[in-house]
Structures are given as structure tokens and as C-alpha cells.
Image 1 (cartoon, rainbow, N blue to C red):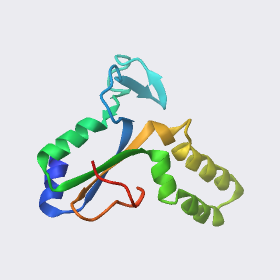
Image 2 (cartoon, one colour; image 1 turned 60 degrees about the vertical axis):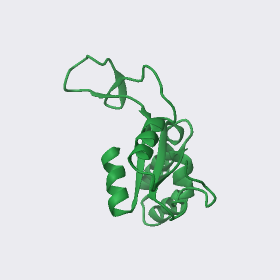
Image 3 (cartoon, rainbow, N blue to C red; image 1 turned 120 degrees about the vertical axis):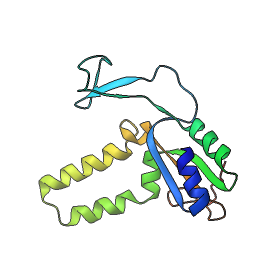
Image 4 (spheres, rainbow, N blue to C red; image 1 turned 135 degrees about the vertical axis):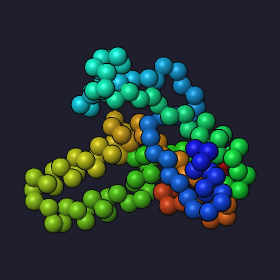
Length: 146
């Protein structure tokens, strides 16, 4: 995160950080995944993905320590971000030329991304921008950097 902050400080621009986690430290989030299912962490070394939840507050702290010329916007749930980015219009655009079987898949996948019982609340989005450009797309216009 420090390298990203330094790039933004020196070159301008914006960064979106999207991952699962919370806006505060958590304990015991180490987990393993295989074929989209949880697995034992030490089971099948090299064949399972080992991961943990991101602490977005730590990313914000590192960014702020790297530069006082950057804006860090509040962490929002992925579902809200995608809805604000008009995922519904994108879905309808994709549905226009799709076969019936594809239409079901497109709708199911969109709901998987925004559904509160799926990725919509589990995944979070944080934005970091250079100073003075206002709230990025996906955030309310009156969003204030932290």
C-alpha cells in the first residue's frame, strides 16, 4: 500500500482496493479455499489458496503516513459500490444479446456480486485519490475523505 500511495503522491491518479475484510483489525481470519469451498489450512500444500481478511483501517493508516496529499474515502460494501456504478444498466446491456441460458447466468452472476448474502457485503471497496478531485465514481457525491 505504501508503494501505491507513493505512486499516487508522485504521479497523481486514483486507486481502488477491492477485497474481503473489514475497516478494523480482526483476529483469526486465516483460511484456506479449494474449489470455492473452505479447506483445512495445512491440507494439500500447494493445492489450496491460503488467505486472510484485509484490515482496511491499516491500509488507510499506511496511506496517510506515506502522504498528506492523498484522499482516502470511506470503505463501502462491494454491492453498494457496484449499484452506484450502475451494474444494473450493464447487466441489462448484456442481457439484450444473450440467449435464455446466458440470461440466467448473467442475472445469477450479477446477484452474486451485489447480494448481501453473497459478495455484496463480504467484499469491500476503498478509494484513494490525489487531493482535490472530489468523490470518485461509486461513492456519494458528498462523500468526504478520511
